Image (cartoon, rainbow, N blue to C red; front, side):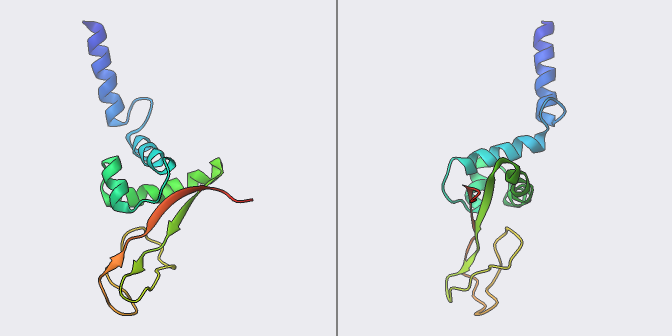
Length: 121
């Protein structure tokens, strides 16, 4: 009986981020494993595969990008692109989808895509 109580208590601490692994680190680890599986992903697909909101995924990507450099990996970002005129949002620093194109004002924007690659050189 006491063992069951201890297991339940440990599970609650783990899920609340107090145990061995904090809740934030678990979310980043899930995000990293999806990216390591290969392919290019949008915020929406990453959100669906990690059960996080798109906003949370965008925040985690910022931190994950920094920590990946220590492991010899790089987060490659293909910028968002306007479907109407082809404008590429190269200088955009936020991971979220832009609302409209600055060139043609279209709202038909392909979202940015994210992938992991080994560092060159």
